[in-house]
Amino acid sequence: MYNLLNIYLEMTLVRAKKYLGQHFLTDKNIAAKIVASLKPANRYHQVLEVGPGMGILSDFLLGNAALEVFMIDIDTESYLYLQKKYPQLGNRLINADFLAMDFTSYFGGALGIIGNFPYNISSQILFKILENRHQVVEVVGMFQKEVAERCSAKPGSKEYGILSVFLQTYYQVEYLFTVKAGVFNPPPKVLSAVIRLTRNEVSTLNCDEKLFWLVVKAGFNQRRKTLRNAVSSLINKEKLTDEPILDLRAERLSVADFVNLTNKITFAR
Figure (tube, rainbow, N blue to C red):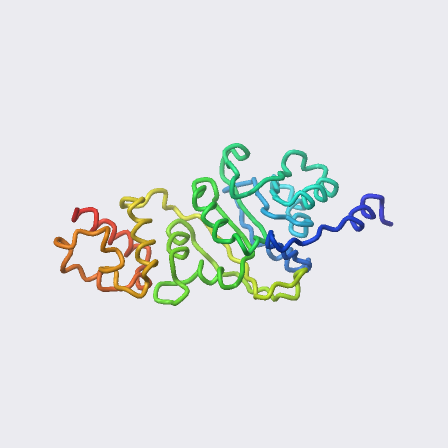
């Protein structure tokens, strides 16, 4: 028998908002599979769900007593709905912009992140995670399939780019499974996919990290050119005239190759 809360929730369904890039997952089997993809082991116990919507992932997260679950949603309608649905969360339910979140204000240590992420800001979400990589040890998320393929792409593929290199510098990236449009409300016009990011052991790079980021960005911003031309503003051309790696395009270089190139540029200055 439904109680009053069930009736209230059914009458106050959250409307998916196009400007927020919302597509609510409706398939509970897929939701369970996404949550089961988290592998906290002994590395973390706090998990942040980004954009919980109406809570289809949340139900499974809160079913794991070993996890301390936090949720953040910029959508006030969703926030108010979830307040009624999960009163036990208290101040662990946050009505705010994930991209502006100060992680240290909420989390004392290692953290997992999960979500059916809004497709219109997926790259910004991933760069926010990179900024907080010292706390974020695992991410399981739904993205547009094209973005998921870029994240997990290997050197030499057309999908391999800036995001691939930066994520794979600090995380093991796994493409887990593809999700069809029909399991969302409203259905997106693209396929979706779930990926898992697992923090690796790299705490600091064996190179000038700021220069590394500049080299990667410059290389892919002109990806049709060889690196000799693409990163010309960063190199000492007189000292690196015979460097063979500069005759390659950025898409051919692994993370280790970019670290090597960054060191060569540093030592030639």
